[in-house]
Every structure is written in C-alpha cells, then in structure tokens.
Image (cartoon, rainbow, N blue to C red):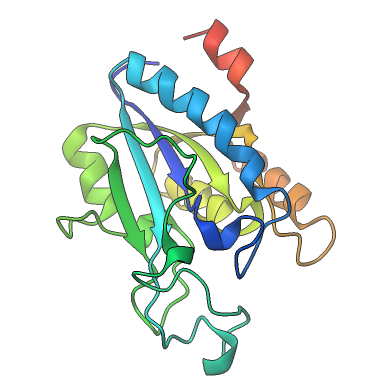
Length: 197
C-alpha cells in the first residue's frame, strides 16, 4: 500500500448491529477486524474514511414513506452513532449520506464530508486512487460503494473478513461478492494484507 490507498469503513453504526433497528446478522463481528485494519492504516499514515447513514426522520427510504426499510440511523439518534467499540482515530474523515429524503443513497460516493465536500472530490483532493472497503452491509452499502468506485476508475479491494450482509433474500451477500469481483474488485483479508504491506 502506498499513499494513494485509503481505508473506507462503511456504516458500522448501532442500528446495523445486534440490538439496533435494522441489525445485520453478526454485524458487530466486523468491529474487531476493522480495528486491526485501522491500526495498520494508521501505522502507514494512510487516510481512513468512515461513512454513515444520516437520515432525516421523514424520508422515502423508510417503509412509512414508501421505502422498504424500518426507521434507522436517524440524524442525532443513538442508532446513528458508530459502534462504541469501533476505534476510529480523531483524524478519520466522516462521510455522511442519506440526507436527501428522495434518494436511498446506499453508496458512500453519494455522501459528503463534515465540510460538505462530496466524497469523490475529497478523494481527488487527497490523491486517493485505491480504496480498501469493509463494513456493513455487503449486499447494499458496501456493494454500491465498491461498484461506484469501480465505475469512477478507482482500484477497489473488498476486505472479505470485515463485511457482513443483510441477506434479505438468501444468498444476497454471495451474489454481491460475485458481482463486485466480476467487475474487477479485488478481495483480501487481514493476514494477506499484513504480509504484503
């Protein structure tokens, strides 16, 4: 990994973990693994991003207003907070998405930094070309972020030991992984990455 690489942690928020309003099965299992990746990227002084769903209380994303999901990750709520055990460093760049009530915005590429700079522009400013992506959920926000990254010309590596899926339909996560790799996303795990850093 060189200075053009960045870690992108997708939506490791309380509502997507056990006990939350839209829990990903074993979603909290990614936390310890992601903390190891955070440590590795910090040691190499590489950029770390953390995206979050940041929905208004009333949005077409939720069932009550025409969407398919129960209310989750509402701005300012406990459910929208990052998992308490996720060890994000102070310099991590937070990317918020899902604020537009007319859009689903699964991909982090639809998000903005705390300075309201769009994620793609932030990547360009920082000279990032290679994204290492982990988090929740494999078959939605991880997949859409990876696919959009590939469409925009980035190299993308999925951290296969640091993702979990919703599997609204059985096998959705496997299909998502297949779709990402078919479009030339790489995959790796912590052991392999540490050995080849």
